[in-house]
Amino acid sequence: MYGLGMVWAKVLMPILLVAAGGSAAVAATRQSSPAQSVSSADAVVWIDNPAAGSTFSPGAVGVDAHSVADSKISALVLYVDDKKVAEDDQLTVVQDLVYATFDWEATAGRHSIVVAQVGGQEARSEPRTVDIVDGAPDAPEPVVTTTIAASLTTVPGETTTVAESTTTAAPTDQTTTLPNAVPTTRPPSRPPTTRPPTTRPPTTIPPTTIPQSPPDIVSADVAFGYGGAVLYVLDCGYSAEVTAVVHGAKSVSVSVAGTNVNAPMTKSGNTYRYTLQSGSFSQASIGNNRQVIIAASNSADSVTMVAGRVDIERGCPKD
Image (cartoon, rainbow, N blue to C red; front, side, top):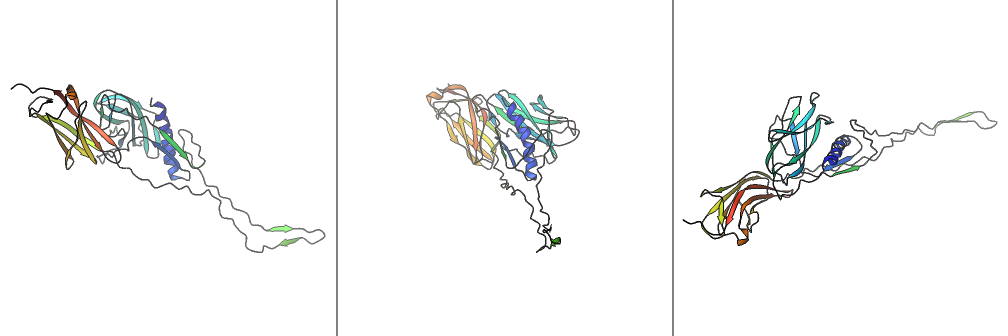
């Protein structure tokens, strides 16, 4: 379902970059999280979407990437868990960069995605972790909005520059012949006047504001000290320690799916902790394989990650 939106995104991206350097303004935006910075200073391939730590339901997920342009690059390839799943050899070239889009039919589980060059340096992007979880939100469908502030014709594969038009009026010296009179050359009463160039009003491009990046859940885990992934409705003294490492979050909470437990986590630097206690679950919480979910949010977005699973039982185990 992403095919048409991605085609328009590839066509409109170069228009945006060309117009930003000329007198025509073209704005193209895709509804997604901003591209994450890559930690390696030598990287030449980047994954723009989805954001690291994203959680979606199984199904179609759009992946965007770009790379430093190289005349020897013939395609960009998407790998999921070290397996090739898609290739884009219709690369969009904009100045020193090439752009590619992929459709990935995602299945449940935690996946590592990487984009690599075919040809050139055979370079690869930094891996990015994405969780695919039943019941999570669907991956957003790309929406492209275009605003054109000047006359601009674009042909795929070509770059069109809008030239400013300048009109200069010639001096107004005239020679006038009167009937029955000697031809007279009218001297100019003042120096020839040159009209100022006629140009379109300059296009004002609003300053670019870099939005805050979504939170990044680096890791999450549930530790059961007594060896079993079970907690109880009754207060049997059994507990589990939930730990998460999160960057850029304003708040972090933990919940157990299908239960009444949803609580804020305690922060220490970038590490967040919470203890799940037997006796804190209602009778309606009883069930097996309950997901323990970490939710992090800031002013930009909210992200989730499954830290582990737990069974909720009623009675305490026999000693």
